[in-house]
Amino acid sequence: MKSVNIIGAGIAGLSAGCYLQMNGYKTRIFELHNMPGGLCCAWERGNYTFEGCIHWLVGSHPKSTFYPMWNELIDMKKQKFYDHEIYATAYDENNNSISFYTDVDKLESELLQKAPEDQDFIKAFIKSIRKMSGLKMDPAKARELMNFWDRIKMMFAFIPYMSDINKWNKKTSEVAESIHNPLLKKAIYNSFDPDMAFIFMIFTLAWMNNKEAGYPIGGSLALARQIEKRYLDLGGELHYHNRIEKIPTERENGKEKAKGVVTSKGEEFPADITISAADGHDTLFHMLDGNFMDERKKHFYDHQITFPSYFQVSLGVNRDLSNQNNMQLFPLKKPIRFDPETEHDLLGMRIMNEDPGLSPEGKSMIILLIPCRNHEYWVKLRKEKLEQYKTEKVRIANEVIEAVDHWLGDIKSKVEEIDVSTPATVIRYTNNWKGSYEGWIMTPEIGMKPLEKTLPGLKDFYMIGQWIEPGGGLPTALKSGRDVVQMICKKDRKKFRSDHF
Image (spheres, rainbow, N blue to C red):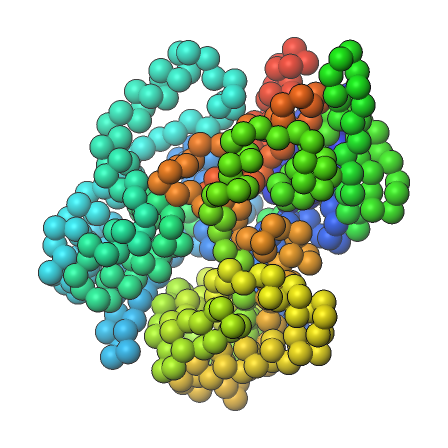
């Protein structure tokens, strides 16, 4: 029985571990944190559980092509999902609003009513959402193993949609610039990262229109715990509080071969195969000392755009906010300066009404995610001036609470729990390069084309996860782990198998 070491117990690492166990490999997963999930996380403060990741999960409905794969890792019949009526609502300073309904007919009516001057854009936008709602991709087979006929079949499946994909394969910021209505322009610009290809928003609304992207009740940590249990039930080993320092290599038959892992404690764990589901930059430039690198990966790390890092301000509020929209983008009375390079004049707020188990009855949880590309400032501040770092977190919390109080009213006096995560927090708990929350942005230039899971000149080593799959996301992590096991089985001349609940 071959042994496999997996670095990282995020969704990609857990996925790979589960499928390897299903296929007769002996696996160990090493995780620097004390819990599974990586960025798919949550944490408790008092009687509140602050959600740190999932807004929606592609594959929530049985008709989704991702549903059967999720059902290999968790019991989907027991998992409850909530389908939002509204994806998000944007407001201006006069309380005018535009809501992005998940039902495409309601969305069309709303946009035409609120922004009639952008009728041409709206009609084209809605037409593409309706069209993309019919796209069915079959993600079951690893792209790396597709033969000529597989690729022909995939090409023909995409042909009816290519004109729409090409039309909207431009930066979200560029699409926003073409819009006349100020509020709709602002809503589109802030829908995702401005550098992200706008086609991703169309995919998202198409999934939601199909009710294939619901929120899993219980949230991120509960989902990660289910996959952790699946992995352990299949016989896998999990080693928490184990940061991997090195991936040793050895010359074998004229080629370098990965020989296992060495932890920061100096412990060595040999294995036949090594998989890194950890941070890509740390894997390539630290664990492997930059010795194995192809040109495309080098280009990515030198030039490509990552998702930003972020602040998360989480509030437990002694007030029932069930009458409020789930996602709100609202303007500030005055801008908030988060650090010398980060200032925002509007905030995105999530009121988690859909999951009553995360807050006490009659109370509410508010989460605000604020993008930041000044991660080095926060890492340095925490390292060199810890008390000032703590003071700044308190200041940020107070200014955000003031803004939310001004917007919603009657909030400040009702706040029971406060938590502030900074880019330094993200790096400390996940080791993600630059504190990025999802790896590489799916820009028009790179689209969804993955990087190679192997490295030139290194045998029996693979990389998976968000630093290999642009666009990130949990379904992508699941598929990345599943795909690499198909590749390993193919190399070992074994038939890949998977077990469903």
